Amino acid sequence: MGTACDTGGQDWTQPQMRQARWAIALVFAVHGAVTGSFATRIPWIQDHAGVSSGQLGFALAFPAIGAALAMPLAGRISHRLGARAAQRFLLALWCISLAPPAFSPGLSTLCLALFGYGSMSGMADVAMNALGVETERRLGRSIMSGLHGMWSVGVLVGSAAGTAAAHTDVDARLHLPLAAGLLTVLGILACRGVLDLRSTPGGQPPPRFALPPRSALPIGAIGFCAVFAEGASLDWAAVYLRDALGASAGAAAACTTAFTCTMAIARLIGDALVERFGPVRAIRTGGVLATLGGTMVVTAAHPAAAMGGFALIGLGVALVVPLAFAAAGRAKTGGVTPGRSSAGGPAPSQSIAGVATITYTSGLIAPSAMGSIAYATSLTVSFGLVTALACAIVLAAGVLRPAQQHVEP
Image (cartoon, rainbow, N blue to C red; front, side, top):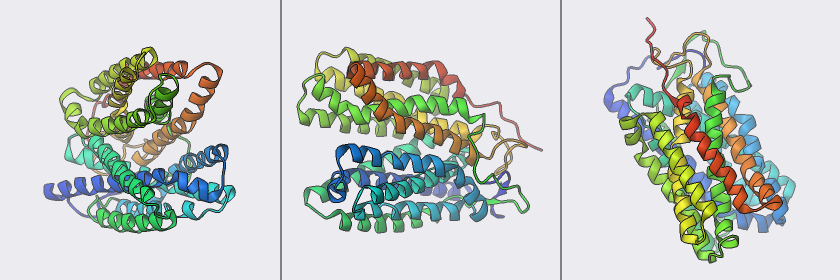
């Protein structure tokens, strides 16, 4: 979205706003379902492409690289097409990008396909979060946590369908294109109800590519801590239980599933907590829970204690990213006339893109950083770093405090 936008001449009634809320929630779920569908077929893609584990790890860095580079372009696309049309276009491209990795015959083509996959993911991510922030502002109550909870639900649904396809030996060259087609149709239908924000004629467009605005840096930093803890737990919890605590393969896998479920549940109920206690208290309490969970992990003598610790980490960090996006959307834009940025401030999509870029960077480096620390010392020390970052969330929660709002005359 540009520096100034309107609603295309449309006044949104309360029923229409409720429809817009559920429409953007479905958009989040579709986005998550693409992620879940892809994740379950990575082993098949590895075998089909004929790449080693090391080569696969190299290739899996390309989605994050593509996302980080493409995210700043989302604001320009929204300015040109309007928010609804841009969301429809970018979400469709994201769904379609699910298929090419299954047809990659080698490392180079797989890297290229994953770069495109990540680029589409990042731009669709920025567009839907910008719409989510604007929908939240117009409704006058917190919805961002619930929207990210719907994303997690989408991941679980996509993962379940992908797991079923994998267990029945369905070729990913059939499964992923079918999933892409179904999700594309569902996404296009969902976008019919989202807010239709459009640039004011003569409004200054956002830059084609820009570094994160300064206002996004402290918000991105707390998001960095949360995403690092989340990514480290998702990728290394099962390994930690198996190698450090001698858990069975089944128990180790169950820990990862439980971690994902606790994050989804926390996000689905998070809006009620934010409404009651405010974002700062909610995040600070979450940081305390995540710090306690990290402490339980590094001191655990039994797998059950570590599983409880990972559950607390999931509960503790779940609200940080949605509230960071909400804070980014308010940065220098809070309380203004609907659809308009405050003079001189970055457009919401630019701030959201900046926060998203920082958090995606955290997701990119977390798995390798954990592995490097574990190689030099131990996995226990690696999760000591996670515990320290969780503690940093407690200390930095104040950056998510809503600014004093004002209304332009």
